Length: 459
Image (cartoon, rainbow, N blue to C red; front, side, top):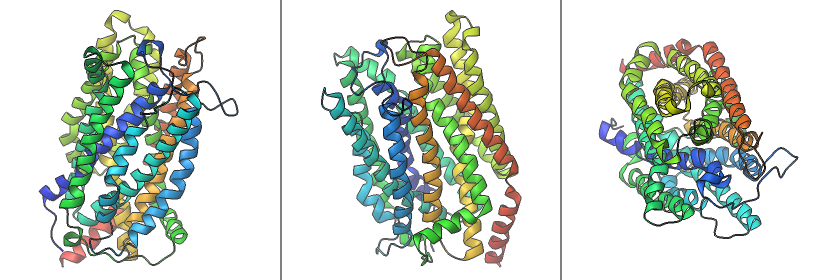
């Protein structure tokens, strides 16, 4: 098989820019858009308040059902991809077919056309669920192909660094949403059209970047796979029978859930708790992103020297402290709120860098360990199981956050200060759980098996 070049890796990682954009749209702005504050100028498009069992909002209920959609689609797509016999390969055909639907569904989530809340509830549900399905149909094959193409351990870390770099830069553009929205408002657009036109621009960019590797990368040049013949449920059972996979997946579930709480509420923290105007949010978000990018080379070298486990523990521990610090923003004088927010953004740069680069690389180690042990390539199944669990974390956050932020809200508002503080506490508890799980993970055992196999191949 052809050795993968750096250029091919960079091209292959381009979709992560699109994923960063779409993730920012959904994780950072979905609740803000559909559960708006009075200052935002956005209309109330969907039914507000608790609509199910006195606990869940409309968004929370839709996310809960979306979790079921995830549960079904992830393993099914993984199995289809693992066993695909297309002449172009097992992964690339899925990426060609579903790039545009993936991007378009992200946009249509925010484009409910009616003034009727009931119709908009249905619209929101349909396109959030569609987004989950098309995300799975594109990203499960994409995630499975990277560890198949890149076999060298050091180069694999570099690959996930590029992957993360594109994701973060995409997220950075996503974080600039409020600034772009402000420009569009000043050009005469209404608040809702300013938000929608911003997301339209993101969608076009994202669709192009999703399509490029699907038509440029020739999968067959890099990969010669042994297709699994076991049934789907047996493959999933095999994945979860791997103790290292269970530990890493549980740790990533906890840290992903904690991060999702933070991302879903960051704009609320900035505007409601710190009293900083919406259009200045980009300063804080850009600071954290630039700070994390500066740390990328350090994290890359650190993980190659000590493994991924120690940086993951440190990153999750710092992020836990950051979540709990949000509860004390009232201690600082409001006139220095922007300075405090910028310092906080610098503080979270380290966990942002660690948690953007290393989870995928750590999971790739576990998948390769299993391939060495079994002789069968089941990257798709492992990617699906991991994707399902990490999306479960996001779903948990998006299901709970709308209910929590409404705690303590005054009449006529959908956001309360007490609720925002609760989201920070709960998010911190989840990342603390990740610290404990990663402390138990025996990374040396996994890497010794992989390195032993690599030495055998060289001989």
